[in-house]
Image (cartoon, rainbow, N blue to C red; front, side, top):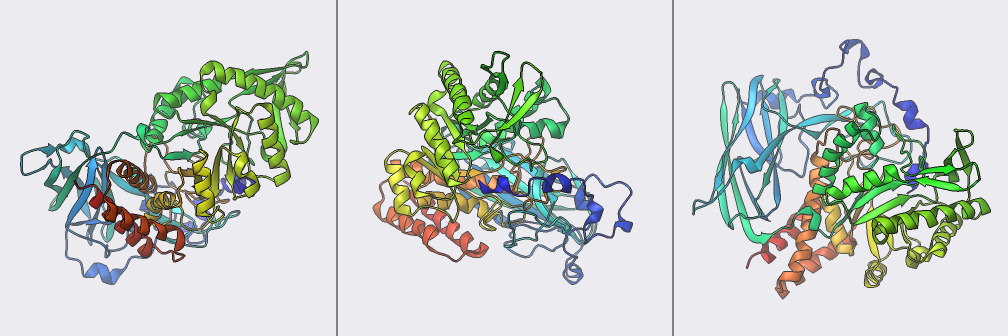
Amino acid sequence: MKKFFVAALFGVFISIQSFAQSAEIDSSKLPNTLPHHLDELTFDVPSDEQAWTKQSAGLHAAFGSTDELYFRREVPASNISGDIKITGWKGERLNAQVIIWSPDTLLQVRLKLNDLTNEKGNKIDSKNITVNLVRYVLANYPYGSKEAVCGASPYNNGYLMPDRFEAFERFDLPGKSSRPVWVSINVPSDAVAGIYKGTMDVISEKNKHSLNVSIKVQDKILPPPSAWSYRLDLWQNPWAVAWYNHVTPWSEQHKALLKEHLKMYADAGGKYITTYAVHSPWADNSFMIEGGMIEWIKQKNGNWKFDYKIFDEYVELCMKFGINKAITIYSPLPWAERFRYMSEETGNYVTEQWVPSSDAFKTNWNAFLTDLKKHLEKKGWMKITYIGINENAMEQTLAAIKFVKGHSPEWRITYAGDWHEELDTLLNDYSFLYGKEPTVEQQFQRSKRGASSTFYVCCNPPYPNNFLFSPPIEGRWLSWYAAAFGYDGFLRWAYDAWPEDPTRDARHGTWAAGDCFMVYPGGNSCIRYEKLREGIVDFEKIRILRQQVSKKDSWNKLNDHLKKFTTEKEFDSKKITADVEKGRAFIEELSEK
């Protein structure tokens, strides 16, 4: 991936800047201590005073669309309704977004969740419904911006974006402001098919507003995420979890934190375990660099010894949560071809440059791969392990790939980067940058011979993407694109490479806000992650229905519709929302017996 070779030191330098340096903030008016939540500051759009004067006093609440964002100083105006109707399968998580607003201050705002019942008395218990307050986080581009680039991103612009989830019991709502609340309805896998209805009450100290909920449960079952076929590959940086929480890496405290963290990845169907054979394989441009999981030790006699303790612990921890389809080991091609090892003689770390075509690389990596292969075979992991090759100059890339394959034909190789026809048959797993891909026919041939293929977005393109400021529908659209193109899934750097204060400020300096993480500390989800998960569920439904249903006319309609995702060039949020909604309607039709 090209993004790791951009602005190596800029992100670290930028992390020491304060919020007061934003060009949109008068630092003389900042409080001496920043408030606990950034949404108490005025980093977002000015309040529309005229719109607020038209609002009647007291509590207002409605369902909004989960495909768009609602801002705290704006009166909600689009896709607002007092009731909601959702269709889904047994075992599926259905999402909704409640928007609460008032021209005057409201105290003790909370939601009362009620059971949903059908006409036969069956119910979806309220314990299956969860709500989260959507917190605002600082981005460096405005909503829907198409200006994001790789490299130095603006750090002196501030735009509050609703994204991060936070559990709550009640909250106070300042006057002339709105707050979104994310609602998740987990339909039990043993639910009886039918239409379930009920209400959701929004209550404040002096007001109450009821919203109507109708859930149609179809007679189809969505398997648990561990059984999904979708190959979700979100690159992990476990050191970021230790760094953010101020605990020793790989201590018991660290591993306890990782459990909740990995549980959420597994819940979205995560398949790849990201591991590191070398120290800091990228360009040291994260706030917490990725350490090595396998210690290289050069003994006094000149022979190599390899310590797999951390590698084994992390892989085993991931597997406990069902993340067990692929282990990726990075990388024979680290940034600047640098390799670090421990000298047994001096006790010092030594860093050397081993170019893939050099004798030093061949000698040292031959020793490592020989030892690694034995270790993986002993653990029973060899058949799911991939050696990850970084995008680099083609000469170096080919040299590294051919060396690994030459060591043993059993090695599987994965690569994320632009499409290169000369790499096609050399790679067992190929992830293409969106827009730099093979043709649909070339991808079909990869699938036909059993090679897996995914695609990715990173700091580019500016859209579609999972940035903090991306319209949420883009996250769901990505998996429809995967289904249309014949891909096996989706890759993204990164799952958790957080900047300094991610719960309040997602700006990085090197990349667009949200590019380097999809989830928040503490195992907290967000709008972006849930929308990505929704698209994955759509992908799985299409796969399952192809195996179960043979309605020719309906399938012809859906297949024709899927072609639009790869052929139409128009790309705006209204257009792609309509495309996804139409596709979902076909799925609902196919799901009826």
